[in-house]
View (cartoon, each protein chain N blue to C red):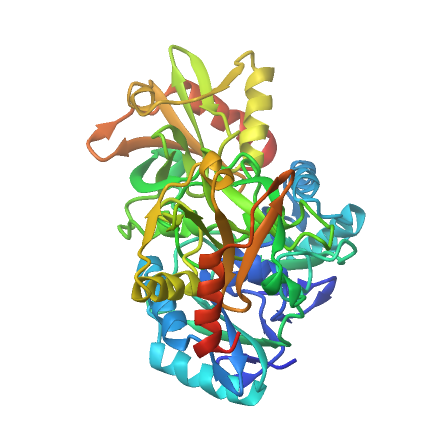
Length: 271
Length: 271
């Protein structure tokens, strides 16, 4: 599949890129349908927020322009956009005027079994805990060793995702998803002020649920609260919503609100 | 300066490298004198430990062989060795048989002012706190955004290093150094079980101090303990030892044990 660096087709980049050296950058994983990036505004908004917090001067118009051209070229699949602080000399200090490097990687749409959406998935309870770092919490940055370690904890193909908790045991998210639960008709998702990735589908669902008269509580989720939930589901921008049915010996039903949000997404976003 | 990828001169690398995508790898920054890597055994031992903990099957003999050839070619300066889990397909799961990619980057020896060693340095009290992640603590892995944020906190060239504390405020290390203190003739350095990088010079100094009859306590260091110390010094494998003389309004004398360890290093390691 195709890849671009700084707006031109390229399969290679400088060995001195700070994205490699330090993970000094951000990324977005974007569904591409009929040559268009899905949820573009949300992806760009998160990227802008990441740039602001990491103090990277992102050329947002240029990034959008390159992304649109790349997606048009790709047609169908996934566009992964990475931005890094460009080449580094030795040492952690970055040149304040370092031009941001843009990298675009194309790949086919992931082949998730359709039953993941229709019948739900099994979740693996990862023992890898997320560290609490408010300065990086919520960002989709390039420091992702915790996710690599967590994903390496299971190899059973019957398990679709892994549950990640923080150092205090609170429920945060999936390895590549956000998590919602329903209790007594009330939707809830984890506060991401200490760790976790603030997913664009999470933001989309919070807005859609609100429009349906179902405001979402954003707060701390204890593990016992997850186990006691009436419904649990995962979401991300590639697959939409997966109901969670099983984790170790625990099971949850496929619930009414989960279906309602899936239907709502399907009506307008082609999931 | 020269760079190699997988044993051959190269300035470019695949855009799909997992080191870029996730920081899925390790590095070593190695002083090169007269064509030889300094403290080679310690660097290789730390790399091996990192590979074991990240479950990367490192080809250690090949890595050593390439490093020795690269250093012979470089002559004088710094060799930065990176190992990554190679190219990735989309997603955090790594192929279990993915060949490890070796990257070697040469650079000139850093031009630190000689007074840093002789008269000591000023330390900046960074507000960036290190997250606590026992699974990654001690390793020199490629997820280094905390160091990038901390280093961006000061630009005054009169400040040589920054102090990093953990989320609970305990004293851990410098941005690119480890830290020791002396109180009542007793050496102490931070326990790195929750965060921090286990430096090769830290290990070297713990061994040398022991041989001089000065065992080092490894434990938690409260901020007040740092302020009350008789001597404070920083170390890394490129510059050896820098006495710390000042941090904000606080100052420390240049002490006897710091000098003793500097002399001991100079006698055998050419600092």
